[in-house]
Image (cartoon, rainbow, N blue to C red; front, side, top):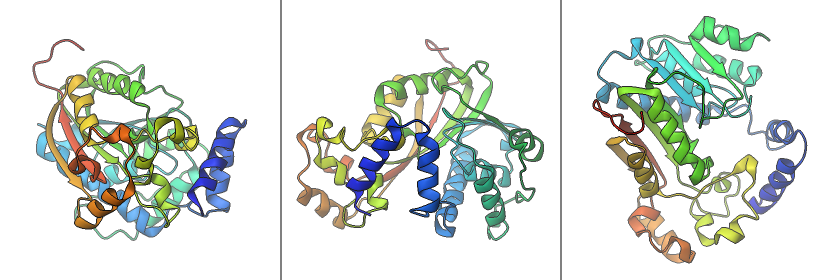
Length: 305
């Protein structure tokens, strides 16, 4: 599918009543990107393992006793279920809208039965019925809350040990992202750890092989607004922007891993015709396709708490 047609369709859906439900129907029955593919499922489990490995290195305590918080859990809850499989006992999930779909979550639970990983301490096996939120807590220690404003969750201060987010931050406007991170700072206990996986690529490139992951760097803010729907919002921030936002919220950056730097990708950027609003970034910054950023709330904190 040509990415511009998809963009215009999602702009129309975002303006229509019930647009979120129509978007779900479209992805499930027209593009057939739902339920997630086996390869996509494996990627999500891999991201969860990255979170666990990073947190285990930097969190001073056993993850089995830690309270985890994730915002932007999505439709199928693969990441939270994977964290459960890796040994996490208590999780609080928050979504700005109630996106949870039991059928997709059950599909994920079925896919876990075929996962081969020696690091999994268990596998989620019990399927969900209509009483989904209650069963999530009973079966998997997952408390699902929606709708919840991630800028003002209503959760108790210093009540969370670890925070994860997977391919969510890139969908939050920069002005709101600052407030979301400040809320994360409030929620975390001193010494608490956050692990974020961020996808810096143009997400339309996943549907249209005719464009690269750097496609949206060609457009001014005004031009990009014609393609940037609420249902598929992309803030186009680059790696240094997230580091600055985390630091300004009071966090220490304790680890980062950048992905996507290659000679081929550098050539794509050089030939692309980058819009001048991205001139302040180096090629080293622009070429980063995704990243894992691990940060921590200092043991001695001041200011935002």
